[in-house]
Length: 159
Image (cartoon, rainbow, N blue to C red; front, side, top):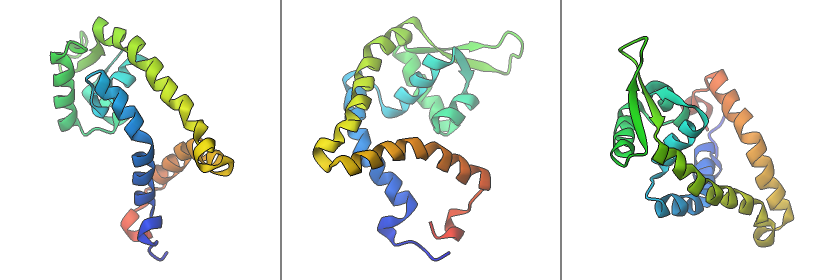
């Protein structure tokens, strides 16, 4: 497969998508004193009672060595804590504290509102583009899964 034009390459298109979507969310996170990485950790812990650093790393896509620092900062802010496993002393679980759980009720409505505003892009870019945005959100997960399952080597595929 021939290499794609740089501006149409998958990594650049994904970066542009993030650049278009994330500023609004980052603004909300900043208002609550959170980084994007801290948000990802809390978001996962709000859905799962607790998990290991390794599990959190897999779900948040934050490398484990970096994640330790993110969890340390969340711990010092009183939003998460660690608990050693009662069955395997080598395992340490991270969980959201009461303050971390309370924060969900404050941040989540704002984030939900930002998501709700995404489809309103038809007022700015036209209805066809808005449908494309919705389709992208629906189709992104299966595409990522397919790429991961196939083990595509990006450098060899011209992506």
